[in-house]
Image: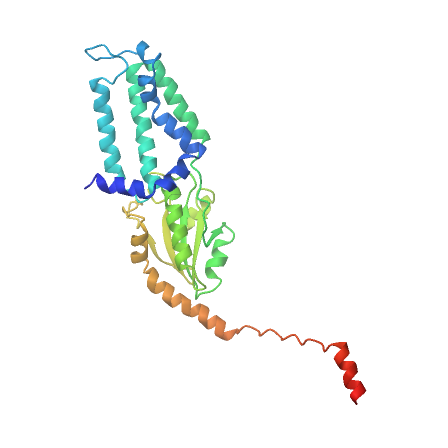
Length: 299
């Protein structure tokens, strides 16, 4: 059952996966993930590789390579148990496939290992995962606008995500946060974002560490009247984030979004009652000239 659930999830999201795989970042990542397989199985190349197989067939995996690949599969399965989006599933597979390729290439030939590791470093520095570009009702803050916007109207509740573009967790969470904004955004409940990787001073002010070791990205903070009410993940005394899963169900439950939404809709209704729409004036069509002349003649 543990194997069937990820398989069914993958098949369900297969059209969306195809769209991602066609993007240059994922095309290059997949190519690098299967690099060792291609080298080991390509005729004309594999015959010149060393092997520890008893039959001397250098175009097939030896027992140690199979062992490394099986270990990789176990790690990916363990990591994907906590993945909440298809992007995270695919990202985990790509990440640990590259790690396995580094080990396999170094074991095969140190020169090939150094070459592959150099390619991985160059790819990491020059290529970034594509950002979410779908529909959303989210306001992006800067260091000069966030305080003013949060304190503008004390009746408005804000949910603000503190994120960084370089964080894979933030990139995976982007589509979930966008869906929540589409479902729950209204006059009294709004969604915002602040890039703490860009505005370092704001990360200190709102106590959200941008360090990868702190595991505080992304952080969701609920504000009412400009004051923080709650946040997830919570942070312990040592400044480390308490493990928390950013699923849509967890966010709706922890932030009580259904009740917040119902209360916030009343704010929009109150505003509509105070400022009713101005009725449009009916346009009076002028009488035809012919009828007007006939009326004067009758008189």
